[in-house]
Image 1 (cartoon, rainbow, N blue to C red):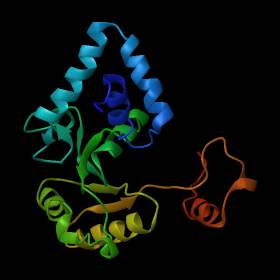
Image 2 (tube, rainbow, N blue to C red; image 1 turned 180 degrees about the horizontal axis):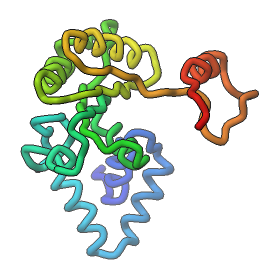
Image 3 (cartoon, helix red, strand yellow; image 1 turned 30 degrees about the vertical axis):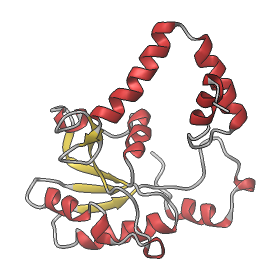
Length: 198
């Protein structure tokens, strides 16, 4: 029996991460009720990203040209590079407004058990960017989990031959959180990352 157009849309939407059948159904009916131009704009945006998206030649962020908008921005601080695991991490950091340097995307994290070895990540390219390009600091912003920690240590070792400060983002208690609900590891990291009050 052929599938109806709404059922097909629900099935396709439910393939998205974190979208169950009920959410997909709500989205499908929302799309059905959208203005024609908005629905076509959504479909066009999906088509454009699949057709035109590529990786920036410098930092491996997602772009539609040779260099991403961040790498092309002459107002960015070129002496600092923030290293992230995935291009999606850049969006979160940019939204914070707390960083005005450049980025470098590793395209994953080390995980020997999953077969992800250093040669599969963009660590060599990072070392090339740091070598002789006037970079003063590399900020490692990998995830605060086992894979992220192993990756951070490997990147630090890979950059040890260069005259560059290698730092790690701080992590610990979330702003507005209560200490009584913190787990032991988060509390330990919060204490380790303490700083002097201004």
